[in-house]
Length: 462
Image (cartoon, rainbow, N blue to C red; front, side, top):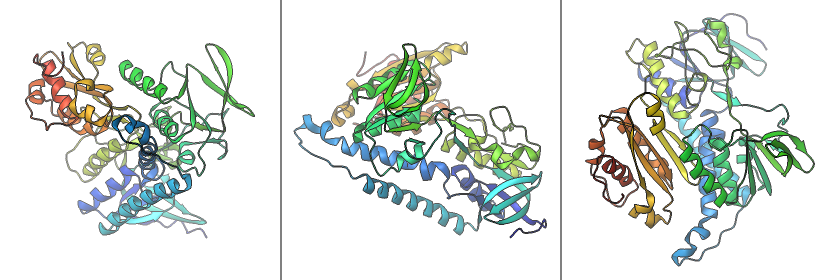
């Protein structure tokens, strides 16, 4: 059945129920707007359902499987076994709990949730398809948070069996014997570490000359060492040519080779979903990469706002959530702008990576004087108690002592991102950080120790 062209009026329309979309809906409801949220799949979006959350849960499972090897030198003998079907049930349960929580929050806030595919038909109207039914909605304001989708490779079409995306790999019932990951960014690194610990023989193929090509060289080198310790094969500077009976054919500086693979996962990046929602119909400008042009209030037109993966910047859930509040405030004539000093980046590999703000090289590239001190975890009491002293924390400052960046590599360093971001965002000085008493023994002390070194009074490092 197709409903006629008569449209229902809505006040604040949110398209997309991921971290940005549901945050926008909840904030709009708090400000007294009548909010309608349209989601084509499950609430929570890619991050909660098939991305950030289940991947981190799988990483915890992998760490548990690898636990005997970690504690063998502590006088502890342990064994583990793995049931991938039970692991899948575990991941599914975590996702269900969290999506259910989002659903309850929206319900309590009075947000109307429509399940269907929304597409702009006019500058102030969308058509929402649910099966054979089409409903038309005219809005006062709209926040578009339709996220992104994986980039495919023409020579490696996904078949849901031997060639898969990250989502299918996460929820697999059978552990691959030979897994090749095409893409050495943060997704490839995280999944490579996890599946190597679970017992797969893992190879990463990356077109650039190193893994994590967008990160500082020192960080990339540390992660490379970690991958090699886990037995992960690295084919950097190589491109995938196609799947064959024997495996994945690749080409690189040394010519062509076939990598054994019973499963190939394509994880080369993501593409904005600006085309699927037809946002250009509203008059919004979309660049050649599919990114929607917005002002600091995330405004794409007078009445349409775009947030999250649709806009420039890192495609991260926490960026989308922060942008959501700005967009809704602007729609409600409240002063706000998205102008963060930093957006934290974390990689849950082995070792973990945390980077906030600018590296020493990036500061120098701006023409400013740059000063940095690196505190090694080999000098950290907490790192020793955890049994992992690989890695470091680096604090970077300008010539007047303002902290411009903090980077860390090592076990559990993702948990330092909040303090690091606060220091950079509030323009804390080296003395502010060095003079703040940190609890002992914690990994957070490493930030203070690095700042003390930068201030010229190192305690546990040279």
